[in-house]
Amino acid sequence: MTVDPKHLMQLAAIIGAGSLGRAAERLGMTQPALSRNIKIMESQAGGPLLLRDRAGARPTPLGRTLGQFGENILKANENANIAISTVGTFQENELRIATTPLLSGTILCQELPKFLESQTSLSCRILTVHEPSALVDSVVSREADLSFGNFLPLPSSSRLKLEKFFSDRLAVIARPGHRLFKKKGLTFEDLMHERWIVHNRSDFFRLQVDTVLRHSNIDRIDIACEVETSIVTIKMVKSSDYLAMLPLAPLSALIASGEILPLPLEFGIADRSLNFLYRRAQHRSQATQAFLEFMRAQKEYWMLKD
Image (tube, rainbow, N blue to C red; front, side, top):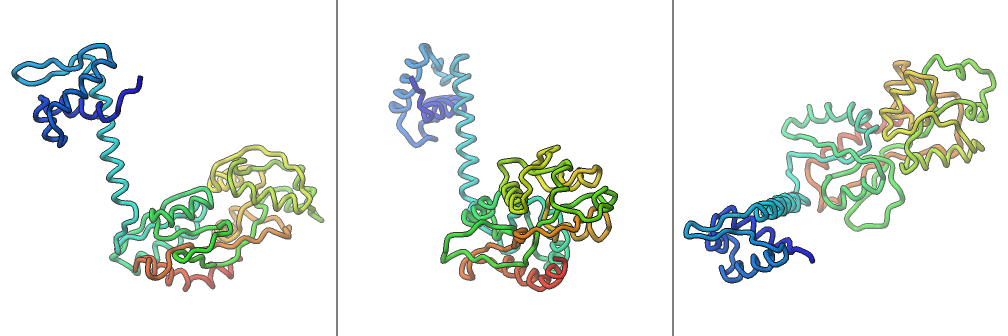
């Protein structure tokens, strides 16, 4: 036996209206049809759901319980309609950027305030995601005006454009006092004797790191902790002797201040580009265009950081 969700919503409407007649009018259906549906539910429930008198209709204890389920469905339906109505719309004075936690807390954190100071009529909303596929989906679904990050190869699209911002590279980072900075003739093999902070196994960035390490004949590392974000990784590396592999450009301020440092090792396939993904001109907002022009002007600065 399966209770029809529509019947539950109709029961909630009756309880809210206080009578079948008023509820039928609000629901846009006839009272006999509404009454039949309630009788179907009463048959399924094995007892009365409403007490009818001259004043209208009042719920029984069972009717009140089922009516609450119907009320929850009504609220969920209303929220879903609101969400659907907002997807695909944008305001010219709002910029929505999908990016990773690391990039939102580093490069964008540095550049966005300067951009917004030059565009006083604009506001910005950052949507944090963890996978390259989510960066793409955010733009395709129009939840974001553009995405910023490292992307998987994209299928060709007449509506989307991928623009390279600059090339970055991965490096092993550690706190400045780490013993490996004092070691002469540092090799990849030395990394296998240290403990590491890495992303979770299901994370796409973890796959990139594992690929780079294997290419350098590092077939195993001693994992101390798996984390969800690079921000957590950085904090743990700064306060311990653990190692981690992260992209260099977002860490430029921390490296310049001496809070963390890259080990002097070069990895052959560690290059990774940072890109913007956005809709082509006829589908692009003025806020998106203004931000892209601003970031293009900052491109040389970040290329020098590489």
